[in-house]
Length: 350
Length: 247
Image (tube, rainbow over all chains, first blue to last red; front, top):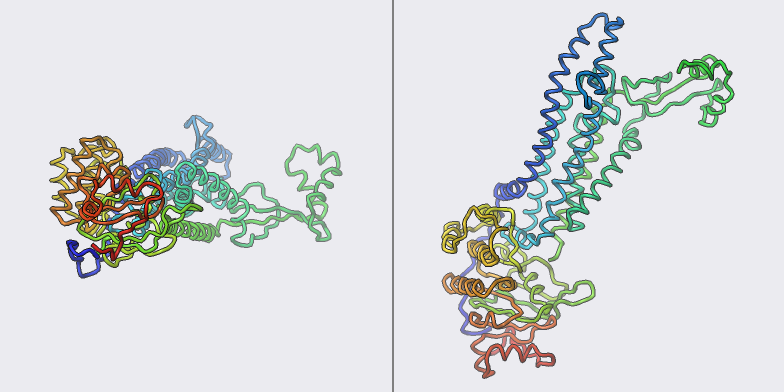
């Protein structure tokens, strides 16, 4: 050791306490101001539209519900008009889009929100080199990463959860109407807690891939692809298995009261007909049935000849059970992505 | 107390060693010039010292006996990376606020007074500042943290001659006025010659020479630049003045 070296000022005796979360939260919010504004605008535009439509729609729906007896031709006509105008959106009142269009647009919202808010969180720091600033401050990179990831996640979940409540209020005439089962894929992911859970999932996935690829755009692209694949898989393959379907006699064409998972027929001897068996039957139907204009001609013929018809249904009463199951695994996967992102931040070298 | 002390430190990126068997003891109270050609391992050594990356082999302690990257080390070492990365979209005042909220210690009045003196407007966006102003802002933020050790990686590379001179004057003032140890890296020694009190020459990942400038000048009887050049040339004797080197 060189003798004439001046000493460095003595270190403070006590170990420092970590930088408070409130200070880190300020940093996170300041840096995410753009994302907060973007999210507010996107959801705000939808919210205003839903609010206005809900009020207009409620007036029209009140005349439908006030009509007695409901089975009367006049009342049926009113209900049909309501459905045409507000569900399909092809009628006089709204020229463009009805609830059907609105809900299909809303399907894109979770992945858009998630990808745009999640992907830049870490990727932009790595792209711009600012991680060399952020990770060498007194707070340390782990606390910084936790704040950066968790605070927007909580805000995003809260705001999309609140948005779902508004959407439900707008959408309830169609649920009450029996037009749509809330278990159907086209409604399920927009209701309950699923909408917020899917947004959180997209966000966590985007943040993780952003850290993994160190680039914002590839992270967004991968998030989009993975999200769409998983959303389709959830609606078609995963969700039907949350609980064993209820077996119901008869082939209902309309889906009121539940989500029809499967349909099958049994031969008079109790044997379940395969698709080949059914095709075979159809080909050998008497001409009177084959040429019948009635859509029920085939099923009527089947029941007349001792066949029994069955359906596997997920009834509406399981809505919340399904919602919580789906939100549960999405939450677990999202948490794993966020923990994984923090882990990547901790082990990443310069 | 050595502000940076390494023992056979090495860092490998895939197959290439950016730093190899680096044994070094940098005493406190100096303005240290870390000099070497591009790719010599200067940035690697500094990023390990500030805790941004971990070494592949060997050991490093900072500020006496702190492990590099420990909370205590992060708290007391201020680092300005090459090109002074800061959030370009933020106004200067918010950038200060971000730094303030990421640290235990923060001297807001010092930072404001310093920016006033430099004529940097608080409402200006960081991305709109000139290179010199941006470097000064990064230095201000680093100094407002009241660090024990200030580490600057190639701080002058992007600056014009006037900004360089201003920047170095600021660094010397801080080092002398506030007793801060400073480590600056550069691939051009001439830039640091007038301020450095301690010299470390690094080439191809290895320490060629390290020692107080005054002693090097006395023992070699040549100018600093000539001394450095001698060690920078391939086949130069690997004279390493490291920990325990006699004066």
